[in-house]
Length: 175
Image (cartoon, rainbow, N blue to C red; front, side, top):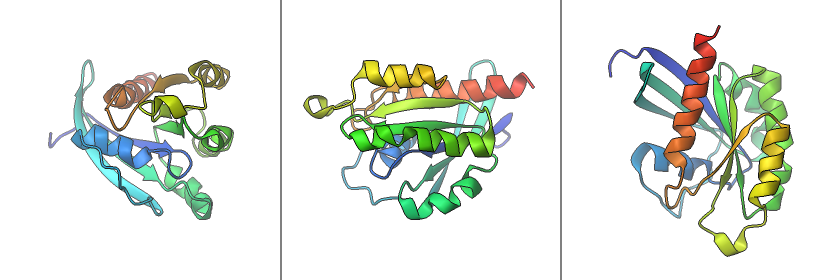
């Protein structure tokens, strides 16, 4: 797709270790590795897709490092973002507790752009600490939709990216 009808910027937000890089590579390449290095700063990727009703879309995907030292750069990375996936680890309460901070950073930089809440690592069934009902309530209270994913098995990964892309395109065409 040399000539895209749309170019969008998607950001992946969440604490270090929640699986942002694993999710994006599962989406891009349908592959999973157990040994990704933590993203330092930002990892930039591009995916061309065809979205029904919109045509060709070129998505720039910004995988932001979740470590505290990169917090100062967040606003810069969020510049121009059309939407984001806010990701937490279903097995790690701290990653869930930090969600309001990530949402606030995004909204301060980008206003009311589309965000989806992603509960990742559903394949780790017996170690899950954040129940779907609790995450669903949080999503509802923050005007978001919750999607439960597994970067390892691929569960709902493509659906999450496509759903966010469609929300972004709906948003752009309603301006």
